[in-house]
Length: 333
Image 1: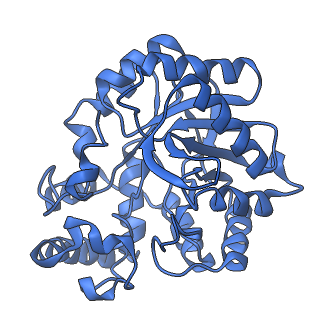
Image 2: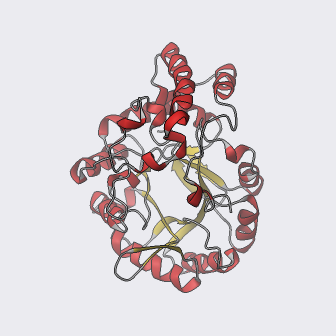
């Protein structure tokens, strides 16, 4: 697996990481259908064999269960993995989500200690603020994160789903290594809302989560009814009703282009992300998909192919928003 420097602070990562969210529930509900712990751990191990040792988790996932699963997977081999986790969705002392945000300095310190315990490690390679706390200045949150770096509990800091203005404020307090945002052929807002420009100007790495459009680009989902009953994608406007079928028409063109190259649509979509010099963290809980995704790093797109893909799904053409209305206010803030 090819590697790249993420940001300008010295963190070296594979161009493809592994999103672990789907390996556990959130608040008792499945994210992308049922997961099996044994298979999930085997997937993490296979990913490492393929050079994909950059794991992305968060205290939200479970809550806390996902970090504990990652701990089982990396036990005895901590130094072979680059572990990123996130905080900011408030988890109370009973390990329950309050569904509020907390970026207060005292909570930052509490959250990292809990994550270190759950992960079975004494440091996290990359620590993200998962969502901005609207009631706490970003400077205060990042100031507390900076203290974690000084204490050796965190090596590098990152932000998730924040605006260009927030990125600049945070970076002025402590160098930000990475910004994580949803980004795929179907979600290209970072190209026009200033986030990509800000990260490149400031020497901050950009990490694309859901680079396969939450699995939609795999082509495995043919109708909204194909989602399991408690799959959270049922609540996403982009995959509901007419929006689903409008986007499916776009996907068919991507599938046709992939077939002409002798690759899968997933591999084509990931190759497009890599061609933009962006690190991708597609999520999976199955070995066969981590192997398929890994092969995407070897796919080379010509300038013409890249342009054709971008013309199939231009910025803003995907039907429906990527979150329901109540959650859209949490992003790009």
